[in-house]
Image 1 (cartoon, rainbow, N blue to C red):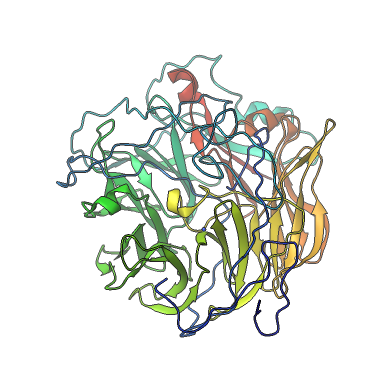
Image 2 (cartoon, rainbow, N blue to C red):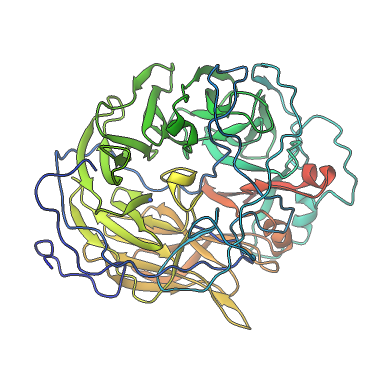
Length: 593
């Protein structure tokens, strides 16, 4: 076996020693677990990625993974509707029903999953764990909408920071409604932050609930989106600033908006229960709630129609990625910037943020094996600045960090973390030993849904990568750790154990420190803390009140952000057994001083 110049082969980590690529490149990827969900473990990778391969250097910008994950919507080629004339061969993928307090497909139970995560479970990198995965069965149903080609409408909200903000009598009774912010704060202990405000769901959802998108931030507004409603709230007090009604279901979105507060989301082309296509792009100004331009993407090709959608925003560019094709548009005016390449290699997903990193698939003939590449791409022209070839048989699942560049790749149920240098050359490979690591993304792989970036449980600075471990559970307690890896060698340099019965997740860098989300238990409120890049003890920034822990802990696989001294915690999915419970379910909690 040969090895990269100056590199010693890693031992006992993600992979065995490897061969660097020879000659020119050929045409050449949840992370997550709620507090009470099962664990998912996978073996260390064998025959991990190849050594350095570099072309056409040229950095473009800087980016770290976002502070929250992005959840996928419903995808697939479907029947014609008010937006697009193209027919489609496939309806919605099966989706199992579940109510409040029970896991969605893939988070545990009996049966078998469709992949190593069984749907929306967590990527765990390390040694083998025996698990049972639940099948993602069931059927998706839409229970509202009349199929009319209505236009998005923005309206003023009620400004009630503790209610649904829906402006209608939803019929809930006092037993269904949860505690108010005032009630939770009345039991606050010394040193605990306040519940500044909270929001009930207030959206009438289909029978089995829906995924949520966001939170997104623009000026003094925080925005969440779900089903056919996008809502903006004042960050300080939760007053509803605007609400935008969409004519059809949300089905895809990037992890970040533009710097000036605009976003482009994917919506379905009709309201059919099963025959709808995620093919319509709708621009929204998050500061005002006004709908901008709208375009329909042609997805009539069978391969395209079967593909999931991965979106991103980089600068003034939004991408709409699918297997075998990606279309890019200017966010400000909808002008098409680039599309399908005249090449056997096609990008299918990109990172959001200043640096546009692409996951690329290459296939000369339909019967040929698929080979994948990582590229840095100019967001205006779509041209690659350099290319890194992933070793044959391995697929890109996610980008953990865009600068420094760390990618996650998969081969069957083996996983590896690869560190690349500024110009796309091989730098190191993470060596995990016997520890199990858990990182929370929207899906097990961008090829099956979600976005390429936006993972929680991982962040990086110039010298180190910080990963959350899988909790170790005993009869008495449960704890997990944050582990730091040296990017130059891939080896661990320190670890810090979190508080008992509370999961710790690195989110992003806060200056020179690591920003940590400490998740709640049912008796302890969550918190935000920092860790020095050299390790040491957690330093609490904001401790959420214990009185709010039962409510905070019910936010399903919450996405959390720390912005201007406030903590925003949002449920990634809402589902309940009856309409009243669904409307009254807490969707977003905000904490502060």
